[in-house]
Image (cartoon, rainbow, N blue to C red; front, top):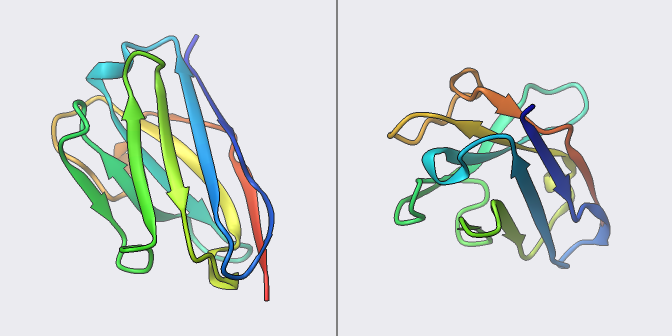
Length: 124
């Protein structure tokens, strides 16, 4: 049974930072592109960042570039999202997802497995 479990969300003031973690089980983690998406109330789920199998390639949405950093530890089956300089527009439920392909995809339909999400709320 595949499980992706996100942790690390919470309530922060603008300008603060958070680190999200996602632990995967039931998959050969090193063979999956891992992505982070987010969904704000009333909005569609949007791509935030993704990282290749080895961690050598990363992609970011323009809205988070320079503030967020994705990384992974294949020995711990964990992907991280370090978020700096948070602003209220970052408020959303953040989801991690796994994609068993070589290339990094930005559309959520490309991803096979999803976690249940962790809430990030940034107050002004």
